[in-house]
Image (tube, rainbow over all chains, first blue to last red; front, side, top):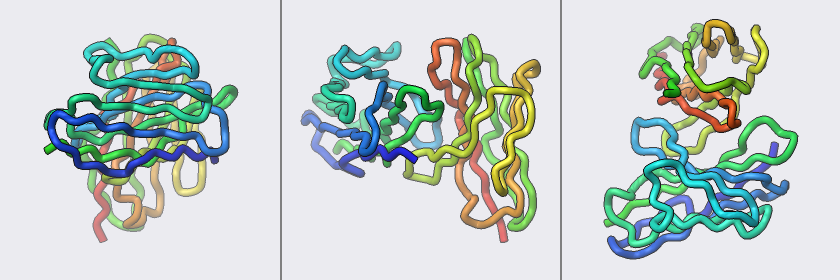
Length: 115
Length: 109
């Protein structure tokens, strides 16, 4: 199956700093990439949908100025958590789909801890 | 609103069979997915149903009834490594994936 690589796997940062998470599709060109957040024992919550070369579409309640998404190429999308606070601590997961394929392929996830 | 319901937690015995149910109410339907998620890891794809009926894939089978808004995932010959959360997700009319909260499956020896 297709491979999506997400980096880093985990990160600890200080409150007020910014953190960038990368999501790469290694062997296919992703039509669309999705960013999710998952709090412990809760479901995946879609944050935004990202299409290459266009602005991301954010879900209601997600601050686009705080969670910056860049999808510069068909194989790379980045999520930057700006001015992180402890409440942003969560598991962030990206997924990608490509044209003609049904399932979404997931990255390994990034465990963010803000101290 | 859109809603997907599945049990929070289930317990089963190694070697046995377990059925995890999922009911959904979504704006449109373009397929139902089951994913397995181990703690601290990303979900991995298990099955996809878009037509009514049973899809079998090794020890795992998934069933769909669109008229009832219902699906189940059937796991046979349970192994300890099957201990995980099982997520039901529906692709709605906008082709967005709507996720259930997941069912934590505990396998006991």
